Amino acid sequence: MDQPKLENILLETKDGVATLTFSRPKALNALNEQTLRELKAALVWVEQHAAGREGAAQGEQIDVLILTGAGEKSFIAGADILEMKDKDPEAGEIFARLGQGVSRALELLPQPVIAAVNGFALGGGCEFAIACDFILASENAVFGQPEVALGIIPGFGGSVRLGRFVGQPRARELIYTGRKIKADEALRIGLANQVVPLAQLLPRAQEVAQEIRKNSPMAVAKSKRLMNQIYTMPIDQALREESLLFGGIFGSYDQREGMNAFAEKRKAAFRGE
Ligand code: CAA
Image 1 (spheres, rainbow, N blue to C red):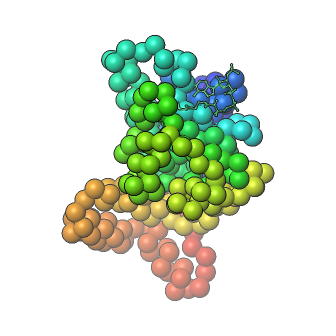
Image 2 (cartoon, protein in one colour):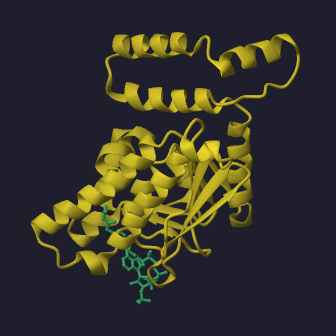
């Protein structure tokens, strides 16, 4: 299955892990419309290679996706301000919907997505990082939602998702002040799961991805789907969803294999089904 044609994003695959690297060096990897469309196409390609899909059947299974930025300074410095500045309300809304659509596609991708934040993750950059399942950051990472300083508000889901990572009061403070925070503070408030030296960031992301890959990709995908679904549900409905999905897994190849392997004291060989 051919990879999509991309100019502002590099797509690499290795050992069952795809890495998408934002690369617009002249704008610190800021997101223009072309980059958003490329990311959308790349995510469709990655999804086609999830366990059980057509691309995976061709021997190119992708179990985990890593997002990062090219260079040593920036993950994504936000939406492209120069491209955005003369928009009218209609064009502004269309642009927000495009970015939101891509961030939602990241969230709904069957495979886990790790944001490897290697520098500035501002505005739309922070919003894409928090649409990932979790964030690993380099020591030089800087996070923030500085939109109010530009006279706008977050438009790619920041107002909706930031509070889920750091709690509402902290999200409000960050959005109203536009304050940029460094990696150590991001770690302390739960925005980043781990902080490592820049040179260690991608190797560490690969290690975490390989830890995930030891497990049944079907069970990992179901865990992700459930955790997305139950966010806004009342607790009894959420527990019901969990028990339905838990029950539905019994009898699958991976459930039998995982439990038989435990009983037989051997390593499981999962098929993702
Ligand atoms: N859009 C377009 N170009 C950008 C950009 C952006 N978001 N961020 C940086 N650039 C460009 C700069 O214009 C500059 O280009 P030139 O060399 O042609 O002048 C180049 O990248 C390098 O940037 P700086 O010289 O500013 O680098 P610095 O190290 O001095 O500062 C920075 C780095 C603090 C990230 C600064 O560039 C900055 O503040 N960028 C804007 C960050 C921002 O406000 N992001 C939010 C955007 S709005 C948004 O994202 C809305 C939304 O929710 C969807």
